[in-house]
Length: 580
Ligand code: HEM
Image (cartoon, rainbow, N blue to C red; front, side, top):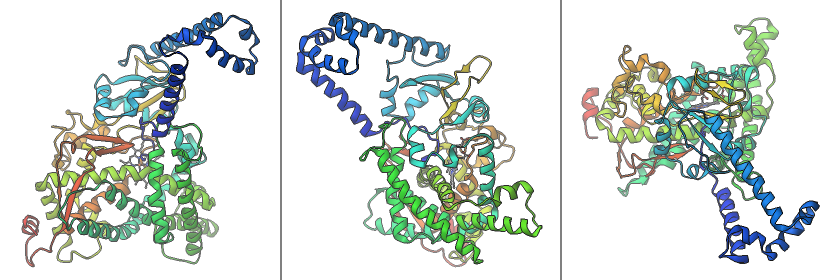
């Protein structure tokens, strides 16, 4: 989402934290300046402090306060504050009902301190405390769901819930971006985008992808020439960014434009935090993210403009934007000719003229939704494979069998479809380490989530996927990497489709999932025959860092070398087993 598009990152902005900290420190400092050794009552009672406070009261036109004795005023203020604090606790306890969670909420900030250092362990403690648990951060009442049933119910109850992005997302993405639509408007818009993920469209994207993978593989191998291990989290991210930009925009964006978008995109990732400085003042993370979005939008609008021109001239579809523009042109033409295979509904959705800006905003939403999730998925895919050479060997065997003698021939979508083993490896990797562990939704009305508890209107309600994807009843030995569990159609894993929540569920489920699975399978296939790679296992390799999505805490330290071609006449099994 972004990360994760809707990924709930409870990691506060460092500058907002800094602001809070400095506000706190400066308030302490001023107290220290007036009378460090006395308690707060005495501080505020002291004439020097009162002389500072009084002009502000007069500015606020509070004559009654000016006239009253300082002590009475202070007690009045304290009584109001105490009432507000008691009310806060009473409201929290009422909303909490009998659910697990802190008995009392820390005044005003709630679990904010915890949210500064999110960790999988802390989340797990909450998920394991019950199918529903609660917390509060800055008066936002949060209900976290950890069971498959509750999670699915939240995702599939659009009359009660809607996705709610972190506050900064609207500023970063533009409030009129389609991802903020709900209900029928959302369903309609989304139907129009389905045309971007048809088999025909995916085949076009695949032809772009492989050459980009190979460029990155070459770089990783050359960087590893000195034999040292390096963290590969960012290089994996770069591979995804390059692939996404070329798949979405083809060659409409020049090399330097793609670099500009890629270099600046990180500013967007880091601004997607639950708590950010509320105003996008220059220098803040949100401000920087908005500049990064403007820059990306400039290139995406250029893509839309140029694609419209080229497609109108009968050009070939070379990227996702072309596929969309062509579908719009075809729908319009077929409608005017009266011959169309499209349903009237499809025509209605496609014939409308999408402006360059609207197209650019969709591209922006795709990049935003995919970049962090895909990066996390690729990191863990390479890490799992390096840690399980026996499984990588089976992946290779399948690749050698499918590709035959010509390992340089471009891979086809039909071949990717037949990469059955690589596909289950990808599926297992996503199950073990789901890139998106939860997505924040908002209860826009009282939401009876089960027969015992109703989520109060206005609460944040967070479906989380980890427990569903590690449910021992569905996934035998859930913490072991067993791709074979997916090979038997009768296995509990295959029968437990309701637990497969990697891409969410319901009206907002991931629109890009077919493309994501195809991309991950193709990357794995190409890497397995082109490279050997090793992972330096450190004490932090299995520790999970939550940065919108999840990453190994040591940044995935790896090195890559070229994998030579197998000997002529070697069987796929021999080729896969050989040290090449
Ligand atoms: C491994 C990669 C990916 C993962 C794990 C992932 C996961 C998710 C999840 C969990 C959601 C929220 C679902 C819900 O609320 O029910 C989501 C939504 C979304 N994803 Fe993905 N995603 C991935 C890749 C992609 C890609 C490649 C694209 C675009 C090309 C994409 C576009 C979107 C969009 C646009 C939404 C919002 C859909 C809507 O609101 O209707 N995602 N994704």
